[in-house]
Length: 412
Figure 1: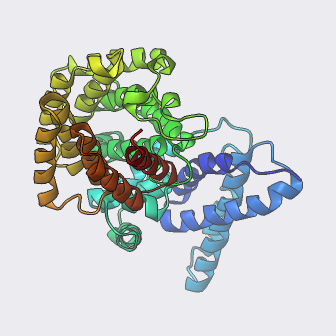
Figure 2: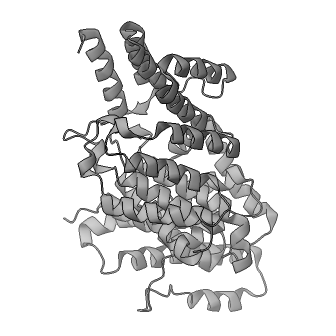
Figure 3: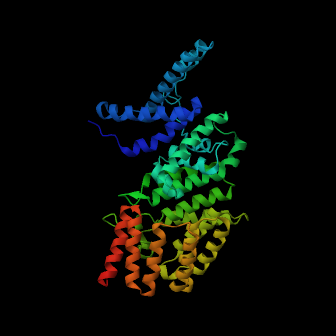
């Protein structure tokens, strides 16, 4: 019996969904049809073996489901054009099934999901589900809202598209620029979820971060003069270059300051540095370029002690003005502590906590624990490491935080 690789279905799902949506124009129905095709694959492929063209197989099965549904709808409404429409549907064979060159529709689907009928946050949430394959819980954690709230938001997004009357079709060339900000944000969130998985037993979901980089490369090839597209790709490469070094032999988290920098991917660092330098030279600076510049400063330091923290602090100050995001502020607090000392950092952290936007977030306690450890307050530091461990959904991160607390209690 053949085992169906889980990563194969994950990688194929957005491509199949993109092809079916592009053909039939109904996102919600296409999503249901693709799910049925995936369930059929899970049953048939282990028994019959993988087809020669898994993507084409899935598209064909989903297209048949859509055809059946449309025929049923036509029958119910007794439209006069039923015969003509059925003749059209009978010829709707996916192009890659009959031997034509395959097309990767994932990037097109990504832009389609950023539909003009949706708010930016709803478009991003829907796209993370359709393109990134993220669960409602994962998307909710990215937006720092309850899972039930996010589930309702995604459901309303689908309803809004249907009620708008605006076709769910491939955007015209002049529409890409309008949707670009949302597209970039989606790719950014998909990459982050892959690089630092927000829940579960794995520290990283490599397939997600690799897919985000692949799509960012495609977008950069299509829009080479867009500085923020270049900046995002640079940020991904400069960050992903450290991926192997942040995981130990037993899957444990290794923080930046303890990583073996010799194991970083210096070819990737070179590519990322070149890209961010090119983007910054164009004059119009955006948040992804600034984040890439920060990542480059970390990557260029031979040791954590030689990191240019004053420059990083200045860049976080600039980024904070561009993006009203509490996580950006939290990172600025860390940089502030590295420049002005942990006590000054704790003062800044208290101000951030009073704002309430990170209330209950594990990273707030993790940063406080780290700064308290730097001041020598071992007891308070261990306590906040334990609190942080209890608030994260990531098992590797939880283990790391509990290990830090245990070492402090033992005086190690």
